[in-house]
Image (cartoon, rainbow, N blue to C red; front, side):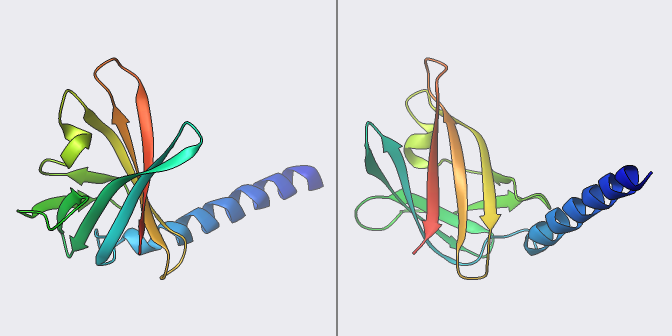
Length: 131
């Protein structure tokens, strides 16, 4: 009986922690800033450009200069981002974004992971962190 109560308590505690981690997603947007995106490939980090987020608008990714246009994005209560416009190399050349998941570990370290599907069916994950 005590083991069962302990198990139930552990599950409730886990759910409470998960709910607290997602509380930052309630407003449906990432914190404003420039997010540096990179991927770890063949033992090195490769720069994929910067994505600028302001409110519910993003631009980029851009490696040099500035992005020509901004597009809207949406984020649900679980931190999943839907890009409502093109996303550079992530959505060109037969590539597509499979999923983007935001992480808010603290007010000073927001980030998101972009899972891209390549034309051959392989998946690549990159991480974008606010600089």
